[in-house]
Each structure stands twice: as structure tokens, then as C-alpha cells.
Length: 119
Image (cartoon, rainbow, N blue to C red; front, side):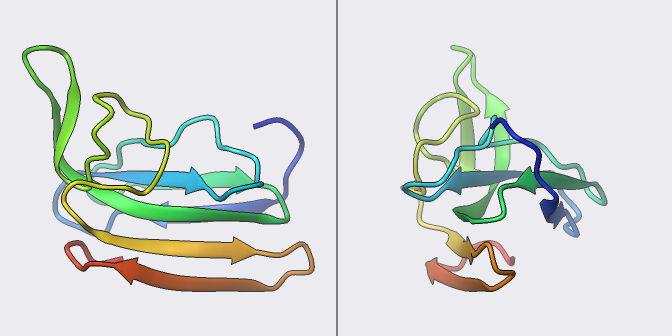
């Protein structure tokens, strides 16, 4: 994602196990350079985002690379076999948070789908 941004989305893993946050930009908004990354227990990350941006966010858990080298997770897997997700179509269904941040400082957030991981 190019440009200079002063808005950030801060994520923290407050679980006792490793999570892999997935962040997929909404339609018509710039994509991030990566959609999935690892956070160990107690770690946090700050993602720089454009002033007007939307996304879907969820947590993948119990992730590993199988014998064939494909990335897969017990919860939140998007079925690509890699650390990239094109959408929030997860297997199995998980809690997905949606954020819509407007350039005037306003924002909306909602949770949808199912509840497997706390957000």
C-alpha cells in the first residue's frame, strides 16, 4: 500500500496462544501489503491505513505448514494454502469484525458471522 498515512489500526494478542490476524481491505479501498501475520501471546502490531478505509478482520488459530508446504489453520482458514486471504470467506465460520473509517474521523464497526474467537 503506497502513500503516507497517519491513521493506524492497532492489534494486540491478549490470548495465551498464537493468533494470526487476517485483515482484508473492503471493496474500493486500498489493500494492505499483507493480509495475514503472526502475533505471539502479548505481542501487538500497528498497521498504517489510509484516512478513508474499510476492512474485515478476524483471527486464525492453530496454524501450521503441512507436509506439502501449504499454510492451514484449524479456525479462520480461508483455504488458499498461503498467508494471504482474498476475502473473509473462512473455513470454519468465525467472528469477523468489519471497520469502515471515514476521512472526517468518523467510523463504524460491527461483528458478523459466527463466534469462535473473542475480538
